[in-house]
Structure formats: structure tokens, C-alpha cells
Amino acid sequence: MGPVNPPSFGMRRQLDLYSTEPAQPVLVERLRARAAEVLDPRAWGYLEGAAGSEDTARANLEAFRRWRIVPRVLRGVERPDLGIDLLGQRLRSPLLLAPIGVQGILHPHGELAVARAAAALGVPMVLSSASSSTLEDVAATLADQPRWFQLYWSRDREFAASLLGRAASAGYSAVVVTLDTMQLGWRPRDLDQAYLPFLEGEGLANYLSDPVFRAGLDRTPEADPAAARRRFSQLFADPSLTWDDLPFLREHTALPILLKGVLHPDDARRSIDCGADGVIVSNHGGRQIDGAIAALDALPDVVSAIGGRVPVLFDSGIRQAADVVKAIALGARAALVGRPYAYGLAVRGEDGVRDVLHNLLAELDLTLSLGGWRSPAEIGRDAVVRDPTASGSPG
Image 1 (cartoon, one colour):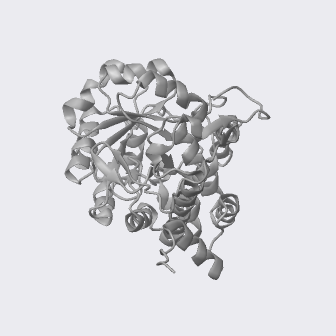
Image 2: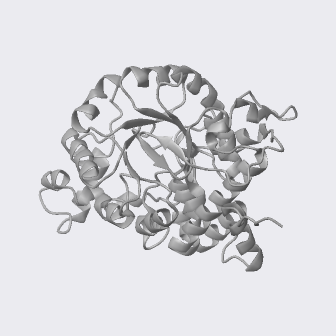
């Protein structure tokens, strides 16, 4: 009898879970329910809520059900390589952590707990400007692991430039500029509870620690926290921005710039014309415009418009490995996962996030092996077909 190869990463994780009852639910919907039980109602509303009737958030999930994976067999895929090349870096997998702000309302250790889990599993973290810990502290926690910084473009240009400089100095390797949140969408869950965490001083670590932001205050944030919060609310974002403002970013950072929130092919082409190094197809998890197109439905046309000139990433609605495969099949280079890891953070802190990521990577490993793909690069458009029984417009 020849040598028996050890089980693959996915199989090892599966065997571990079979042998010991997991400390938190594996199924995302059950984990979501657990998070709803443990979180303060206001924090839960902020995490789970979306714009208006929350139709866009539902559409994001429903769009994935309209596509079915077409596995191939007898391809000898025992141990797929999940790694991808992205912006000059070799990443362990096509999975990144989406920027989620104000993580301190979900768990006392917030972004630092997420950073520790991400570092343990080699999953790049995209840190929100609106974080509960400073970008420097998160970078120190991530150590040598890849990390990107997400910028909410402030009305104060000098402050925006300061954030870009701090991100470069702290070792972030790319800047993600969110374009769809120049002001907050209409979010009834938060309005019903009269709750916006920023007005209570949550999620302001990068602002209150910034020398430019502090220089604009008459008194320090420590001496007059209410004034600091007011200044934040005045400067958070700038709805007057246009494409003509994008050169400002390139003037103040040498890092690759990805534009997040692109849903229209014309905007995708314009992004390229303006020198973007990548685009992220996203509707902010349905939190900005009620009734907006599902992100997955927008993906194929954006990919076509980009024409392979820069990488296209996907965000909004990722819940399991099958979703990652479908997004890649429709042209995404990588996918950003958001709410699932936030559920894990709420339930068990660092351990909860680590379990979510471990399970998602293991499931992705098994899905590629069972589907007959040796790597994400082999997942082509023929890997999915439209479900003939599904309703709704084509994706």
C-alpha cells in the first residue's frame, strides 16, 4: 500500500468540528441569531440595519441564489491552492475582511480582536477610518500581515491627507476610498432608537488621535469631547466631491488606490481614466440606498467595462464559500466578507472571528476541491449558470 496523504486543510477543519461540538454555530444564520441575543439592541440595529425597507440588503443575498455552481469531476484536485496575486502581493486566499466601523460597540476589544484573528489565519484586514482603535494600534497588532486602510474622504483636505500619510507610515499597503457614503443613508433601525454611535464618541479613534484634527479644536478632545464630536459630524464626509477631485488622493499617497462603491459600468470606466488601481463592486451592504441594484447583479457589467485593466473586487452579501466562488466566476479577483465576522466578534471576540474565518477558508478549500478547481484562477465564467427557476433580473 502506498503512502496515505494527510487530509487537506478543509478536511482537517471538518474533522475537528466533527470530533468536538463547536463553541459557536457554524451556520451563519444561527451565528447571526446568537449575535442578536448577546448584543445591546442599539448595537445590533447598527450592525444589522440597512437603508429604508432594507430591500437592497435582501437583494444582495437573493442575487447569489440566482446563480448555481457547475462542478467538474475527476480532476484530481486533492489540495487546491487558494492563493491569489493582488496588487503585487501574494495572498493566502481570495478573501479579505471588509471595513466595518465602530467595532468597539460589538466587543470591548473591537478591531484589535479582529486583527489578531486575521493575522492568525493570514486574511488581510481592511481597516475602517471610523475604527474604535487607531490605525497604528491595529497595524501593530497585525505585525507583518497584509492590511489596507479604508478612507472616508473628509471635508477637511488637510485631515484626509494626514490619514493617508499615517496609513503609509503604519505599513498599510493600499487605500480603499469609499465613494457611496458621502453622507449616511436613511437607516430606520438607528433612527427608531435615536442612535448614532459617533455622536456618543464611538468609532472616532483615528480622528481624536490625529494632529490635524486636534489642531482644529479650541480645546483637546479630552477636555471637551462634545466639541470634538461636533467637529467630526461637520467634517466626516464631503458630498460635493466629483471625479475631478480624485487627483488629490494621488498627490498625497503612493499606495495603490481602490475605489469602493462602483456599481455602474460608466463609473467603472471613469475610475480607470482617473488612475484607480482597482475597483470594488459594493452597495455598502445595502446600508446606503434602499432599492439599489444588488452588488452581484452589477458585477458582470463592471467587469466587462474594466476589461482586465485593473482588478475588480466584490463586496456586499458574502455569507459562505459558495458566494465567494460565484463572485469569482462572475469576474471578481477577490471578495470582502463583512457581517459574518462581525457576528463572530459579537459572540466570542477574537475566538469568534477566528472560527468564522477558519470555517470560511475550510469551506472554500473543500468547495474548490469538490468543484474541480486547483486554484481561484481556474474558476471561470463556465463555473456558474443562471438558475432557470429563479426570479428577478439577470446578474
